[in-house]
Every structure is written in C-alpha cells, then in structure tokens.
Amino acid sequence: MCGIVGYCGLRPAAPILLEGLRRLEYRGYDSSGISVGNDGKLTVIKKMGKIKNLKSHVPEDLPGTFGIGHTRWATHGEVNDENAHPHSDASGKLTIVHNGIIENYIPLKEKLMAEGVEFKSETDSEVIVHLMASLYDGDLEKAVKETVTHLEGTYGLVCVHADEPGRLVGARNGSPLVIGVGDGEMFLASDVTAMIAYTKQVVYCEDGEVVSLTAREFRTTDLKDREIEKKVDKVAWDLSEVEKAGYSTYMEKEISEQAESIHRAMRGRISTENASGILGGLNLSNQELRRVKRVRILSAGTSYYAAMTAAYMLESMARIPATAEFASEVRYANPVVEPETLFFVISQSGETADTLFAMRELKRKGATVLGVCNAVGSTIARESDGGVYIHAGPEIAVASTKAFTSTLTVFYLFSLYMARMRDMAFHNGKAMVEALELIPGKVNEILARKDELQAMAKKYLYAKNFLFLGRGINYPLALEGALKLKEISYVHAEGTSSAEMKHGPIALISEEFPTMMIIPNDSLREKNISNLKELKARKGPVLVIATEGDTEIADIADDVFYIPKTMDILTPLLTAIPLQVFAYYMALGLNRNVDQPRNLAKSVTVE
Ligand code: M6R
Image 1 (cartoon, protein in one colour):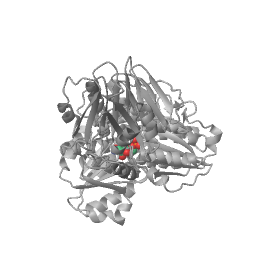
Image 2: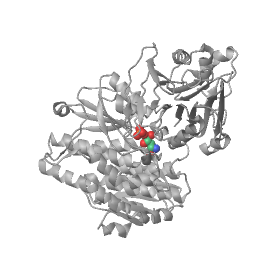
Image 3: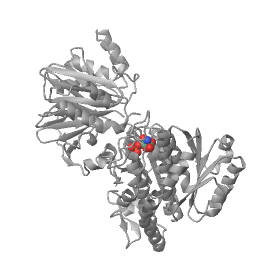
Image 4: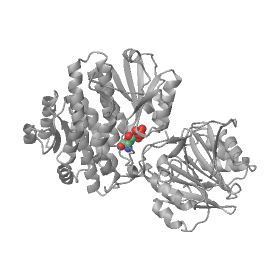
C-alpha cells in the first residue's frame, strides 16, 4: 500500500528518496513521486508506473538536501501522473504526501473550490495541501496541527515548505510514521525498510502526534502543542535481510527460509522440563490464563487462515472453545466482550487497518487483546495488551509465506502451554515438543524436492480454475493454498472442506478443472480418500499432498507430492510448504510478477 519517505540532511535528497521508495516497492503501488527543496523552490516529479520510470525523469544532479517521496496505491481516482503524490498548493511552495483516507474530503473540497481553489487531481489527499496552504502563516508545524483538526479519517502525512528549508513536518492518525535518526540527518517514513540502509535508530510515532524534523533534531508534540518525550529504539535486523541474497525473487527466498524461521519462532520458547511452551510477553498470569473460557482470534487474509488453524489447535489440544474471525467484520458487529474471553489479533505487518481498528474497538470495550505480529515496533504490537513476536524476519514478498508458518508455530506453543496447565499429560506434551523440534528438518526435506512441484505446476499451467480441499486442521490450509495460487498466478482458485465439496463445488468438476487435495495419513484419511474417489469418478484431475509411504493414494490420484510423517496435528507446518511452492511455480510458469502481484499491497493500511 502507499509508502512515504522523507529526508533532511546534508546529502543530495533525491537519490536517498528514490532508494527509499525502491525499498518500499514491496508494499504494492501504482505510481510514485518526489518533491525536493532547494533555493526557495520545490521541484516535484511524479509518474505512474514503476520507480524505474520515476527515476528516469529525475535529473541525476537534482539539487536539494531535503524532500519527501511517496508510492501510491490508488484508492480515490485512477492511476495517472496527476493523482500521484506529492500534491502541491497553488504557489508550488508547499507539498505533502499522504497515506490513509480522508473521509470528509468531499465537503472540504467543495468549500475550498467555492473559495476559488483549483484541484489538479481526483484524490482525497489533495484537499490537505490546499487546506494547509490556506492556514499557513510562516509556521509549517502550526499549519499541520490546524489542518489535521479539520480531517476525518486516517493519515500518515509528511509536508515540506520551500520557505522553511531543511524542515519536514509529519502527523499521524491510523497510518504509521517512523523517524529515523541518522548522524547529522533525519528520515521520516511509513516503514523502517525505507531507511534501514542509512540508520537503525528509530522513533515510532503514535496517533495524535506531530513531528518536526531538521537535520540535527526532532521535536514531537501533540495537537495542543505539548512536548512528548520519545524513546529511540534500535532496529534488530539489518539490510541483508531485505536483500534477495542470490534468490531470483523475495518469495522464493522467504519460502526457502522456513526451516530457519520456524526454528526461530520456537527458540527459547520450549520448556523440556515441563513439556510445555514458554511465552514471555503475554502479560497474563497462569491464574488469569486458567480462567480463559473462550478464545477469539481476529485477522485478515493469510493471517486469518493462520487464525483458523490456531483455533483448531486450541480446541483440540487445550480443549478451549476458539474461533477465527475476520477483523473487518468484528469491528462493526458490536462484539460482545466477556471477561473470560481472551482475544488475539494476528498481523504479520502489525499495521493492517481492519485488524488494528478491530483491536481498538475491543479494547474500548474492555477486552484483553494479545497481538501476534512479525514487524517489531508495529502499531498492533505496541497497542496490544501483550503478545508474541513470531520473529520470521522481514517478509518482503506480497504473498505471505514464512509469516504463516511462524504464526502457526507460535500458536502450537501457546496451545501447548494452555493444554499443559489444563488437561494434557506430561508424556503427551513431551511427544509434541519432540515432534515440533523435528519440523524444521522436515521442512528442509520438502524444500529439497521442490523440482517435483515445479514439474507438477508445469503440467497444470493450462488450468483456468483450481479447487483446493482439506479437512480438519488442514481445511484452513486448503483455503490458504487457494489464496496463494490466486494472488500470485491470477488463476481462479477456491478452497473448501473436502466434505463440503459434494454439497455444491463438485458441480464445477470436469476434465479441465483440477483439484489439489491435502490428505495426510491422519484420522480423516479414509474420508478424504472417499472424496478423492468422488472427484475421480467425475474425471477431475486431482493432485494430492500425502504422507510418505501412502502408495494407495498414488494409484487413485493423478499426481502426488509426499510430505514426511509427523504428528497429525502438526501436519499444517508441512502441508503449507508444497502449497506455497506449487503456487510459486504456477505463477513463474505464467510469467507473473511473483513478488508484487497486480492490485495487491503488502500492508493494507486502509479499510
Ligand atoms: O499484515 P497482515 O498479516 O495483517 O496482513 C493480512 C493480509 O493482508 C495478508 O495476509 C494478505 O492476505 C497477503 N497478501 C496474503 O499472502
């Protein structure tokens, strides 16, 4: 989704802004632009399409040591140069970049137009710059504060004025902003990735804060001009983690890292002595956790499928009723908050607007909400009552892969912890710990055979549609497999429970309509095999992910990919991998942009 980077210092700003924007490409965008200040003037260059296109229009020697840049993911108005940010006022002396949505932009625009203001774009964001220009009297920070009091909606906003050289002013409400503190230079971005090449010292801004930066200092105040003391944090990862490291795509890299990322999610979180999980950061005592009667897990997209899998774990391992829900639905459903219900929100980015706003709504009603996030310092991680980082490392490809398996890992540990303080016997906990510890090695065994999946994908490149089926704890995996395929290959795919197939989706089946089935050797295998036979009776091609040694399946299905044996309940950590790899090779075979699929954004910061 939209990205922001701002710079003030001693170096030429343009190359730093362009490099920052390049690092933000992964978020998904359709146009980009920069505004650079020099000698009482701002130069604005903005173009639709890729950063490469923008870069080709920026003179190499563009003078100016302060400026702002933006990648736009269209919400209001089509994709074109005019709608790209930065937006300028009539004098060209003030420019702004904005992430979020201004909900009351129509009345504001009408009022400004009645006053004679001319609009150049169809965006909601442009009202901000004209409104600010009308309030500006030589003090940009003051103008920003006055402007935002008129705005309804969400914003991460950064502004520059030609008459205040070397100053950036930003404000935040619902869209992230992070200050980067360099040596004699400062950055202001929507995402640490934009500035990690220059500094690891960061300050996270909160909603309601306004920040004013010059090369040497930053000042953070609230809208009433009261100073806010801020803590400088150090980013724990470095540049190499956001590079492709020899892989042709980020998605391939992130799929390949999963043995290590699953291992990291477990590291230091297993007690062999108690045959249980150890999760610091929950901020709840064992007594409080024992009182939990119900768990509700809120999230979106792949994180929602992780939530469904987690709910299954909690019920079956810890015997706690648990449900997964779309955060976007819960927010507006006037959720009932009971003291015995523990809420979780899952978000890789920690910035997903649907999930963040649902969490705030629950907290307003007195709920305890724990966050499971990957991005350290993200808004959900900071605002939740406690939680767990999955430590998957930066995930750059739009399609989530390693964050999914790391989130599952964290929930296995949490479920184990809850189970062991309730009904689960020591020997069962011990068996689970031992099986979990073997998972990274088994993930690597699967990845070593990815060429089998590549060959399988090649055979099915003709397919315009795909059905994904699974049962029990692998039912959400079928949904996730379908999501992975559709989002990166654009092949229509839908997932459902193998059992549900006969209640409707079977009508779709023909020789041209393949199905991917997940059939591990678990208690539901026989039922799954009946469903497989129903598909074959209708001449539907079927690919199966099965457990090694299950030769009977190979006799019935068209193609089989074997995964190593593990405990029934842990199979999602293994079935996820071939589903991801299959989708990846389908997308490559169809020449898709695997890392930045069309229309999608990595971090969806609007509702
Ligand atoms: O950052 P989050 O986990 O909150 O993101 C949620 C979804 O937007 C995300 O999982 C999305 O569905 C991905 N494109 C899936 O690959």
